[in-house]
Length: 216
Image: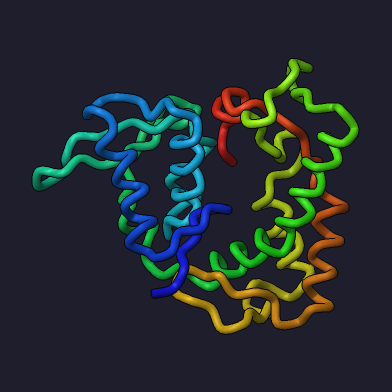
């Protein structure tokens, strides 16, 4: 079975990805907040795969809570937004085959993953492993590379897609149902990496600082 990706996380199968999400869902009681940083970040990336992600996210994600069953006997997830409103979302909908735009976005993340990792490595080499928000020293195992200082990844991607003639104009190699293809036009891939480098204002945060950031 093909590999499945949620954000930068790779799972050997779609079933394994679903198991990881269900471990979060059943690791809390109904009404509880998902307060472990890595699980919160997993749900943020999962929500990005929802076919109605923009509507679910709204002004930004404050937190996730375990919601009582809408029907049947199984709990679910709810998003509490930064404006205080909340809405439920189906994790199963997030694991369905994504729209082409989502596939291209996944490919874009894969194309610049090496550059993001290089940014982190450069900060380690320079001895500047500190939070760009608070100035606090960061533990090596508790660091997140974040877009918090400038446009979000999604905004950078939208700008590039528009300049390339739209999402459908960006061809991908044969992809699995979770959108792990790569750019067929390697010149266009290089242009994307240049566009990302020009517009991405990367910074370092601790997991807790990243947890508190509203998701855009």
